[in-house]
Length: 252
Image 1 (cartoon, helix red, strand yellow):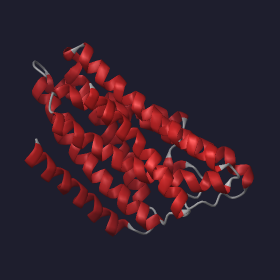
Image 2 (cartoon, one colour; image 1 turned 30 degrees about the vertical axis):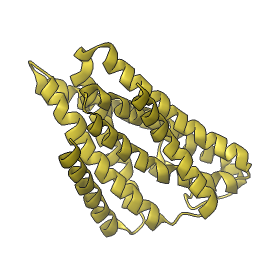
Image 3 (tube, helix red, strand yellow; image 1 turned 180 degrees about the horizontal axis):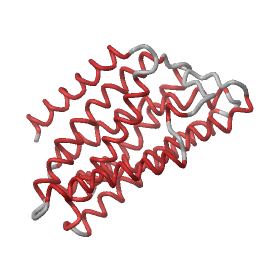
């Protein structure tokens, strides 16, 4: 349980670390953000497949493949519904992640942008918590590590728009911390769910894997391929995937 607590704090704290970096750098270049997000996408893609979806098949008994498929689509559908309610990174017009809202009246869009990140952090936290249900601590930690890596650039990009919109530094950091807290809560919810009943473990693993696949395909890849850094982003994703593959091979 202590390890789960530390993991939850680490995953959520990554957003705060990114926010602190955002204070220091003021502006984040699209190219840098794209490369880091792509690397994280590669790590998450590998973790979703080998750490969540494959174990879902292994822990399932009769009809295991169908339970896994249903879980994947349920996870993706849940995020699809959230996207309909609150758009995420690449869908918010009028907010420049380099820190230049069209004008101060656009602060409400900046806050919508931050809220979207916070809501999308919940299923990512669930994935980190569910990973511990397999009993493979190394695998669970690498899944959480991939999610935390993605949270750092997200924390970085939310700072500049809020500051440019006239928000105080203290309030900006507080709001960034709240987005990380959502992920901490998600981690505990995911861990609690699989701890209460191992019967739901195959579905929960696939559900978490589905949410990660959705985030990668619908959010991260389009975002990293929309600023002219497609080639670098593609190789960064492959490097992240292979890095996770090596960690899984030697630590799994």
